[in-house]
Image (cartoon, rainbow, N blue to C red):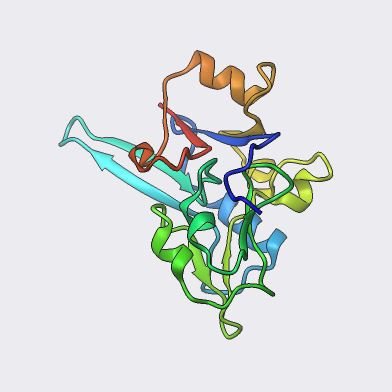
Length: 187
């Protein structure tokens, strides 16, 4: 199967850096929903501070797999364990096919993969595809107390994520990689 086949649905997560308070509820929701073992995380919160006193600016950013449209982790996986789910950009890992070779870890510019111990297979954020299949938001989005996280279909011009990206300035992480990340940060 060609990893570069056309996607029928592109999902996106949009995170408003002005309203994220860095509380970590998204991390706890993910760990709980996906039964992530202690000491491992599929998502995390980064605190960035810029400037000097008295002009300091702090930004909190919830980070995870960017579910790239052209995901190098998928193309570099020698077994097909890393793949796009149901003709979408949601990147999953099939533990039964994963040999733990770490090619996907080396290929991911977002440091978004983890090794499940003691089993040895690679794991990562799945945008809670099991919830998305039921029409629900990922657990991190559903739990966020400030509602700074939004999830939806990127190609639907009426979706909340599309409207936000049309009306606000935004950035993605490492767009120069050509991966076409689908996690956006509102500025």
